[in-house]
Structure formats: C-alpha cells, structure tokens
Image (cartoon, rainbow, N blue to C red; front, side, top):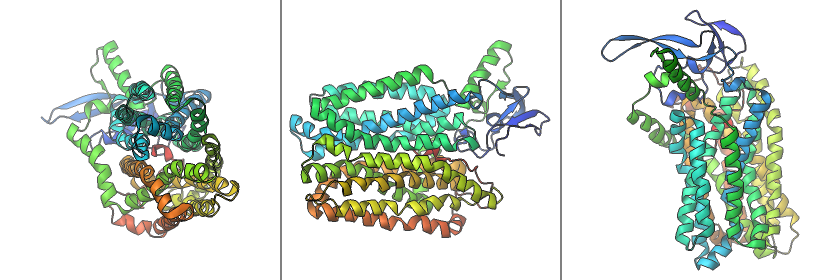
Length: 541
C-alpha cells in the first residue's frame, strides 16, 4: 500500500493513516520473523496502538498492543517541519561528503609518506587501499546493528572512533601505525555511508524523496573529487601530516553538529522507546513492538545479513553484473587519484595543487547530474503511469542506457589529449562527462536492484558495495605500473574499452531482464506490486 495523507479504516476497524509503503526496503523485515506485522511502522492510528494476538510455542495465546504513532504524531520524523527535515538531510549529506573527502584528501601527500618512512609508493598507497577496504567491510556489521539499536547510536559511536583514530595518523612515527589507523578509520567511517540512505528514508515519504535523494547522491562523488584539490594545496604548503589534521577538523566539526542537533530518526527505535515508557507509566506490559515479540534468532539474522549478500552475488546474474559494472566505475574514480598526478605532475610538470584543480570538472559533472535528477524522476513517473503505476523494474534502466556512453567518451578524450606537449584543457574537461555519468549510472543501478529485489534489496546493495570497495581499494596499487607499462594513452584507452564493454549490461537487462528474473530465487515477479516512483537510491553507499 502506498503512503497516503487520507484517513482510512483498517481491517481491525481502527482509524489509520498510512504514511509509508509496505514494500519499503527500509522496514525492519530482515530482523523480524517471517509473517511479522509491519503495519505499526507504516501506519498512524487514532488510538496509538494496534491490537494483536500472539501464539507462543507452547500454544498459549497472548494479547498485545503494538505501539504506533498517533495521527499527526510530532514524534514521527515524517511529520517534522519541512525546514527541519531539510536541515537534517543536509547535515547527513555533508557528513557523507566529509567521509568521502577523507578517503582521497591524503593522495597528494603520498610522496611525503614515502620519503619520511622510506617505503615504496605501493606501501604508502595502502593508506588509501585499507581505508576503502573498510568501506566494504563495515556495512556488513553496521547495517544490522542500526536496525536493532537505531541510527543515532551507530552514528555517535562510529564517528567518534573515526575522529579519534585520525589523530594517530597525524602523529604516526612509523608506517605500521599509519596503515592500521587508516584501516580502522575506513571501517568506522563506513557507517555514515551505510546509514545515510535509511536516515533520509526515515524523514521523507516515498513520493517526497526524489529531490532529497538527489542532494545526497552527489555528496559521495563530490568528496573524492574535492580531496585532491584541497589536499594538493595543503600538502604543498604545510606537509602531509596536515592532511590528517584537516580531516580531524572537518570530521570533528560535522560529528559535533550531527550528535548535538540530529535526533533519532528510525521509527522502530522511537516506537520501542515509547513502548518501554508506556509500560513504565501504565504498568501494562502488553505495550510492545514487533521487534520485541517477533525478532529472528541470532543465527538467522546473521545468515540474512552476512551470507545473503554473497548468495545474491554468486547466484543472481543481475546482482553480479551490476556489481561488476559499479566496481569498474568505483575503481575508475580511485584510479584517477594516481593517473591524474602521472599525467599532470609527471607529464606536464604541474604542482600537486594545480593537479587537484584538474579534478573540478568531475565535481561539476556530478553536481550537474544531481540537478537533473528531478527531470529523470518526472520521466519515470510519466513512464510508470503508462503501466498503471506498476512498471517493471527495467524502466529504471532507461537513464542508465543513455548515460553509460558518457564514461567511455570521457575516457577516450582523456586518453588521446593527455600528451605532455598538449594543453591541459582536453584531459581536464574529460572529467565532466565522467562525473555526469557517474550519478545516473549509480542511481539507475541501485533503483533497479531495489525494485527487482525489494525486501532483499539491502542485501543486494550490500553485495554490490562489498565488491566495488574491494576493487576500488585494489586499483590504486597497480595504476602507476599500468601507466608505466602501457603509456599514458593506451592505459587510459584500456579503461575506456572496459567501460565501453560494460555499456551492454543495461541493454541486456532492459530487453532480457524480465526473462532472467523468472529464473531467480530472490527477485520479485512482474505480478508483485512495484515500489513507488521515488528515487530509492538511498541504500547505495
């Protein structure tokens, strides 16, 4: 059932208002037993509870009251003022931007790490690799914990740990300290990237999410593009250690803002606290939530969160190929952190700061694509209407089919205009179509996975995140060797041809996806209700 502002009568005869789709992947279905009643998380009721009866394993029947939000409940995050919701949205988006910035801002200082600790460039680059590996490992643990404990406590603990472990990086006396603390930072910093989509879904109704999701989706790409720019000038001025002090300042500032001004937004946690309060105030122990009476066993929860992503990755062609495609793109982004210094510093003799400026067209492309997101969303709504608002998941692939060509286009331009004797304009501006294409490809892929797998979507996206992080982490270790062996032009051309080959993936699924889904053990069939037209890209990072 889609979210609606109208009051209706439920099956139990109660007056209710449905504020969220029952198909929303952010509902806590992964931690609840099969058949659990999710209505308390999607409906506001006049009475503030839903009567329910539970039969225990001994056959005893117990009557409970599932605690819900009341009509127009001020504690329901979806009822908060528009200005407050936008404030929280921007704080969370900036948090993501800062986290992404921390992954790349250190790249201009790699040479300083090499010199001070007397290690090879490959060892120094492990400070980037291990950080990105953490991005892939962290979500496996923080996603389930957030569904059990709530969003804010995960934000608070992980960001605190991340900020603290920046300090040993800045004062490290040996390479081992630096690498270990960067690995810890990567795991800790992965939590905001994991939770941000769910946090925004907590705030906005499904049909309202298009623009907020567009604002958020740009942040993880703008951060890596701005990192070399800021880091280049900072490293040239005060040295590589200040790249970490800078991280401490910006990460510490956004941590304080988030902790002090952003409340808990996860409805199940808010309702669980309300149920506990009602039991204390009234003495009535029948006030409960589904999480308290219908939770999965620990072993079953671990299987869903830790094994299901790999099941989908290995058994589902759609998940596998889209994960490979997104890994290619993510790896390309991190390859740029090594390739740009090769082309602009070694080839053209530019400083690290000026080389950082060359990343700006990527950021401009990302922002431009984010500005176009409402247009794409409106096109989806129009197309969905032709299917009676129950379109097949493949409709999500249309933007991907157009934008996929932008990546090889930008790479071919970068490849054959990066001769040292040529002006900087060609390889610099080549970043614009790449940045523009990133957003549409990621959003389309994530939306397609969400619509295809619905309540399994979080696991599908976790599989994609794991694979792309592992690949992105490894690319920085061999990019320099690849450019040395193949040369500036052919190394970049190889990347362009790989991206070109991937262009066939959205077309394969657009024309054959429906048939492929019939062989799937996890995908929804075409007769199942489609998710809302809103941009469900929220679970991507």
